[in-house]
Length: 69
Image (cartoon, rainbow, N blue to C red; front, side):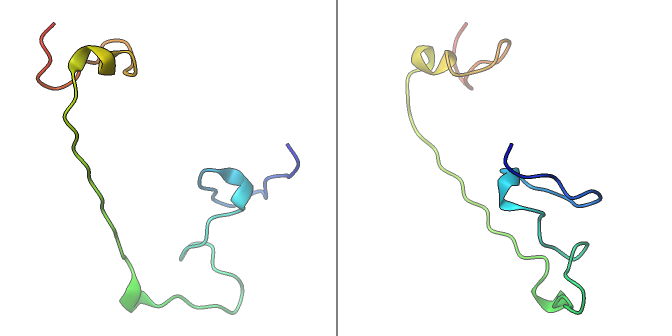
């Protein structure tokens, strides 16, 4: 690994981007704007496919919804 973790900091994945920004880790002298927090964006997508080809991408014990055993 070409970098070292900073002790006591919170990281998100991928960790090579550095410690995660946020209200618990703001740089000294920088305040957060509580009127803009929390902001969330949710995205969903649905696709039709056949169950058998999809099964090989699922962990053991899982099956596609609606698939017959």
